[in-house]
Amino acid sequence: MDGDFDYAHAALWRFGKRFTQPLSERPVPVEKWSGRHIWGGLFFGNFGHFLMETISRLWIRGRVDAESVLFVPRHDALTDFKGYQSALYELLDIGIPARIVTDPVEVDELIVPGQGFGLGRISRATPEFKDLLNVMAASIEPDGPEKLYISRTQFGGQGGVLSEACLEANMEALGYTVIHPQRLSLPRQLALYKAAKHVVGLDGSAFHLFGFVAREDQRAAIVLRRNSEAFTAIATQLESFMGHPPVIINALAADWMPETQNFANHQTWGELDFSEVGRCLGAGGFIKKSDVWCAPTKAQLAEAVDMAATKAKTNLKRRASQVNT
View 1: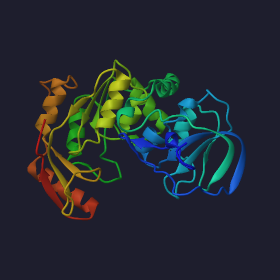
View 2 (view 1 turned 30 degrees about the horizontal axis):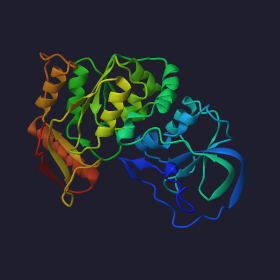
View 3 (view 1 turned 135 degrees about the vertical axis):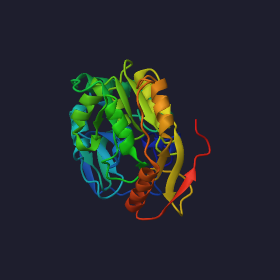
């Protein structure tokens, strides 16, 4: 315990830095709960952060007796686990309820497990957290094709790559099954990922879920959609869980972003050198080097820029990539 009301072990750490900061004063509890409870940490509604950070302390499952796991919501709209969150909590077989705490409470005893997973070097996961996922993975029956392409063409959020439909069509023509994970239940996604031998897609949170069931005999190729280091946590996680690194394909010719923006982020649009994507997939053994590989026309690319601008509700500028490796 640091000072009167700070406990750094209970804080969320991200890329080696403390994310949740100490309180400025000791809160006054509005309720007192009897019994022993487990500190779960911060509850994120975002898919990727839920996978990487909200469940990061649940490795304690079965190691202590407790009445519930306590989470503090990232914002007021998060009142309970829903949808995929509840499904994952159930698949992990935690065995006690999750409670979302919105007001200060006092408990008889609070167990604070360490953070077993997250963003940064801890993306490799602790052995205890891996044990938790291995137990879950053993309960998943593989069911699906050997080659998957994870698509974002039906993703409702901002950002992606221009003309991904062309990339999707190439992969489908070469024997890959295209999936849209946001349209599938979480157990179905895990069954597909467990069955696949080759998984290809743009960098995104779907690869974090794939990592939960990833094995040494599987291979993954991640096509970068933005000039950003955000993919490093995915790469670190997959290398740890598969025992070998994923193939990272940086074929970015440019980023398209609002005129007032000067750096790429999750809302920008990558412009790919399609021939380079095909070359890298061939060199990596994901497709045959002799396979026919198509690229969007100039007209299709211009149309994709217009569609991205409409989605962003602003004009977009092109920022050429400085390095293409």
